[in-house]
Amino acid sequence: MPYKAKLVTRSETVSSVSTDNFAKGSELSFAEADSNFLNLRDQTIGIASDDSTTIEIGAGNTLVVKGAGSVTTAVAGQTLTITGSTSVYGGTLGNLQVNDTELSPINTNSDLKLIANGTGSILLNNYGKVIDSIYYSIQSINRNVVEYTNSNPDQDQFTVIRAYGNSSYANRNEIRLDSCSGNIGLYTTNASDTVNLYTPSATGSSNNGLSIKLGMETRGHLRIDRDDSIKLVPYNGKISLGAVATNTDSKITTENTNANIIIETQGTGTLDINIPTTTAVGTAGSASALPANPVGYLKIKVNGTAYQIPYYNV
Image (tube, rainbow, N blue to C red; front, top):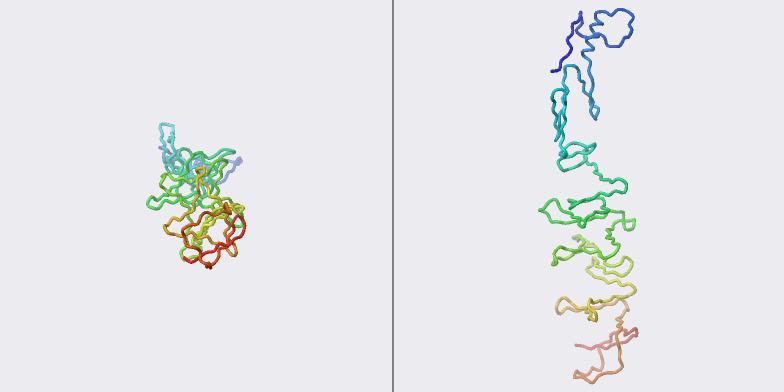
């Protein structure tokens, strides 16, 4: 056990010497001699921590070195051994703390930054997951899949990618899917699933959903507006009905039985039909002859030339 030096003094039990007085030039008094020995016995050393907290260790006291987390200490003879696990299960690293497999800042509400050195990258190997939300941006991930999962399995599973920005700057609120070549696809795991593009509905508001635009930014596109209308906005005034197979007819039809197809123009606009024409007629049919006076006339254009077609009561 530690102990203090044993002393025999002439008269003093407490030192009366509190300042240095080198080369006094005269004999020491009994009090001064006793005090010098007492000061030597009672001197201490200080040990300070990272936060400048200091303890004083004097003769007869014991300095205890404790382990924490996976670190243990042991003494044998004159040897102090500090043993730590090769895996970090807990503790602190500067302003970071480790708890099992979690790494987080010590200070509340502080950010955790992962920054590569120079041109290095931050790689999420194997199967990287982002739980609940990701706030900043992912420049590149060296995997084919990024999975966003809700931490609460009892709730509906929604994946939300949200772009924040100032509306006064162009393209600040956009999410862009860029491709150097090839296609960009939205896929589902099951072939029977549907890929839905929805906008939120505001109950009791005139803004019942937003517009969805499919196509080129400044050219032709398909637009679904909040007034439940679907608009084909052509580039250079052209809408083409294409077919996968060669020489296959294209058809415009209704989904519901007995539903009408309504073609409506605005103002004085008319229907311009670019189709083959002929000046010959076939033989007479068995239908009733036309009445002398029609109900009215339809104004149309055939290959750019204006005509009127009479129409009659049913």
